[in-house]
Amino acid sequence: MTTRSRWIQSLCHVAVLVAAFAWASQLTSGQTAAKAAPKAAATKAASGSWTVPRTTDGQPVLEGVWNFGTEMPLTRPNDLADKARLTPEEAAKYDALMAERKKQRATGKPARYSGEVFDDVLAKADWTQRTSLITDPPDGKFPPMTPQAQKRKEERAALFANPGGAEDLGLADRCILGWHEGPPITPSNQSNVVQFFQSKDYFVIYNELNHDARIIPITPQGVPRPSSIPEYTGTSRGHWEKDTLVIETDHFTTAGIATLAFTGQGGTDENEHLIERITRTGPDKISYEFTINDPTTWTKPWSAQFDMIKTNEKLYEYACHEANYSIEAMVGGAREKEKAAKEKPAAPSGSAKE
Image (cartoon, rainbow, N blue to C red; front, side, top):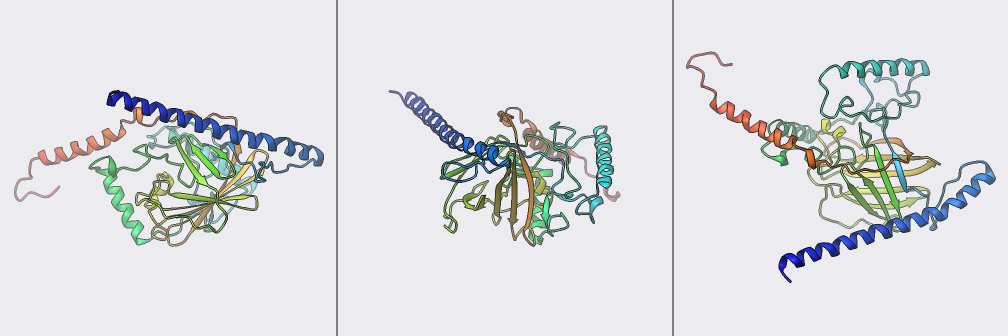
């Protein structure tokens, strides 16, 4: 058998194993949820109130497809700086103001990832409950940045403006990670759909932007997480605290995560420690909360919370690279700019500088 034939045969074996694993995982998770459903339905019918559906090992059923899109911003808008929530009358006026601003932006030059470029339907923000996804600090803003993060922000901005290669651009621009998959998950302007799979020993968070599956071992609370090599999405371990799945993640790379909402803060780094809390709060609702502690980026930890709504949407492939010519254009544009600067005639001696 030739080397090429052996290589092809090996690929076939790998493909069969992957397909078998995926089939077995779906079968196991499907049976777990299916066995729990009749009991939950019977309890609801008897009591007239909703009861948390449970798996055969007694944990809340979290698996399914969930939409986490919302018009509420991560940070509180500056014009609502002193308002943690609005009255119904104030909320109606603010919704009208936001609609007018969106209409005005549509007539101008859209940003590369703005809502005018993408057209997802987002759940309306309930300004009467709160005015930002960030719940702590109380002002709904990021904590102050550290000097180290400020320097990193300036350095990354300079590289992005004049990249020497693809490595000088962000993880989302390079299609390595999606710009809201995190971790943590953060609502964005498109593809706000995530799928959860669960078994007794593992929990999987699958996000198709960009086709990433976080496979999270479930361990008893207090069991230390083993050290590992740094990864773009860190190393995660989960445990149950009553009916809440708590996921702790660390061992990130120096590149930080891809979330665009954090880029204005210089991004995160290898010192990030993340805690996510996922709780089933209704027949079609999950509460997702996270806290980030990154002492070399922010001066103190901060937290955010939002709801995920059960949906029948499908997760279609997000093929980022197939038409991603922006990297070539940005790097090529930087080289042309440098070339033009070198070819520019020198100013005559004694003339004023431009």
